[in-house]
Image 1 (tube, rainbow, N blue to C red):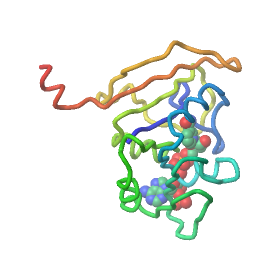
Image 2: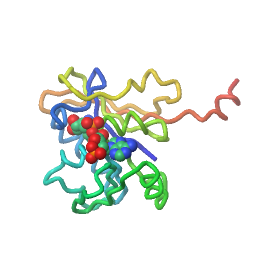
Image 3: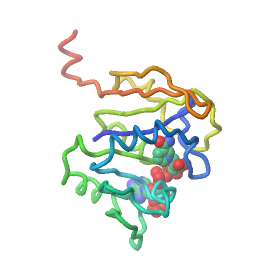
Length: 171
Ligand SMILES: NC(=O)c1ccc[n+]([C@@H]2O[C@H](COP(=O)([O-])OP(=O)(O)OC[C@H]3O[C@@H](n4cnc5c(N)ncnc54)[C@H](OP(=O)(O)O)[C@@H]3O)[C@@H](O)[C@H]2O)c1
């Protein structure tokens, strides 16, 4: 499984159940990665999407405790077990964890690759993920040059889970 997220300098990801900034280049990056793939999200992230609908041209899996929830284009799952059972129907490389904070913080460590857009600003978030740079289980494998759009500077970073076997071989 992969994870894709945009964070500010403080690893903030949202405010008032919305994104922190509108960055067309980042939206394109998100779309390029997830189109035709499987996206996994929490109920609040679904609600933050246009019309409260799942994303078009993607398989949407939504985790909620609400057994009555239904939403266009979405497969609703009511437990972790149900979520993993649904995810297991797909190739792991095709599955993207897309938020929000509760989902990222609980499941990021199950992801092999983390696509993190770093926004070089403090955007007054009320929703945060853990600082992945402090997790020794991941290393950065690529980093774009900084770009600026709408006065906001950002870069695309890709983190990869460090394979314990590789670590032992290096020693
Ligand atoms: N920057 C980014 O890239 C990005 C991406 C996505 C989202 N966001 C932001 O993230 C924020 C939302 O994050 P959030 O943590 O508040 O909400 P969230 O993770 O999207 O959704 C939380 C909900 O998911 C359900 N859930 C989570 N774990 C569950 C479990 N084990 N079993 C059953 N249900 C479970 C619960 O729904 P029920 O209450 O219905 O049971 C819970 O209230 C927003 O500001 C959004 O804009 C940012």
